Amino acid sequence: MEASNETWEAEFFLVGFPDLERFHLLLFSLLLFTYLLILGGNAAILLLIRANLHLQVPMYYFVAILSFLEVWYTTVTIPKMLANLLDSRKPISYGGCLLQVYFFHALGITEACLLTAMAYDRYLAICKPLHYPSAMTPKICLWLAAGCWACGFMWPVPEIILLSTLPLCGAHRIEHLFCDFPSLFSLACADVSTSTTIDFALHSFVILGPATLILFSYVKILSVIINIQDSEGRRKAFSTCASHLTVVLAFFGTTGFMYIRPAQSRPSYHDRVVAMVYAVLTPLFNPLIYSLRNKDIREAISNLMKPRWVSPVSKAEKVFRL
Image 1: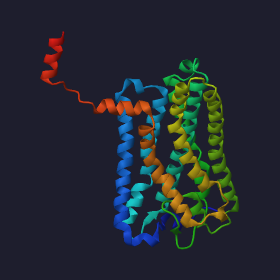
Image 2 (image 1 turned 45 degrees about the vertical axis):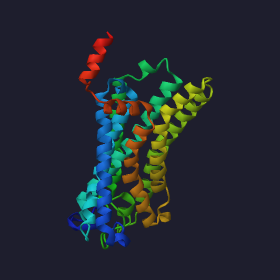
Image 3 (image 1 turned 120 degrees about the horizontal axis):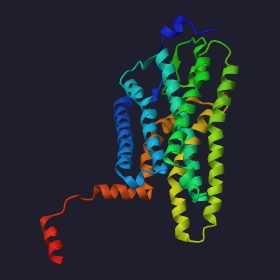
Image 4 (image 1 turned 120 degrees about the vertical axis):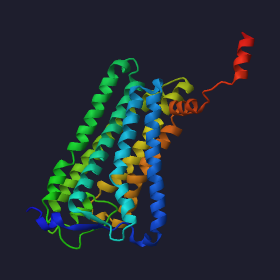
């Protein structure tokens, strides 16, 4: 059964956090500030990697691509969330809702694949250092990244087609901060047991598959690090993985909690809180994690902040010493 023309023309309403409506101006200010930090932090990482030749290696190509991805990942949801905080009705068209679902999941799956490629990069660098220069060239890095984007944008298509054929009814109230598969399935007039099963299976595969590959990579990496005799070498090897591992745990922990549970065990309020974490807070912390925990990026920031000019007295002293 296909969705009727009335469904496509209907207006839907995002509930958000109705208990916090009286704080909407404060929430708007906090969310806007957070969004600007996300944009600024990720843009700074992109510019930093572009400006420093020693950061233009596959490891930091992946970091730059991740930062670029985070900008678009948050732009899919946060601007609409900001607009809804200033509009008590919080409307969204059905077509706009489907587009938001598609791009949010496409970019999220791309990030899952990209984090897997980054784990593979660290595995090659630490476990097979002699083969690393030939196994992870900039060209191969870009091909891996392209594959991540292709997988991400193709994977949600079957679910979007399935969702677009369901007849929706009721008050058109979406019990979420933004449009998402579970909240839209709950509005369907027809039996959605098959649809929710497919949704659960697809999300389980796309979350648990990359998570398993990353886990396998880190088991190999840790086995090599433990056998390093030099404590300084062991610390340096682990530090190259710490930032990535922190991001992986935050991303897969929250998305796994959200999407690979049975539908009946989903209290909508808790889902909205978890969604705020993986849609807003995790992208905010990513640039901080990579800048504060990564020695190369900290040094690049430090070098960038050093004064570029030399005083006339310093020049005279230098000539005198010569």
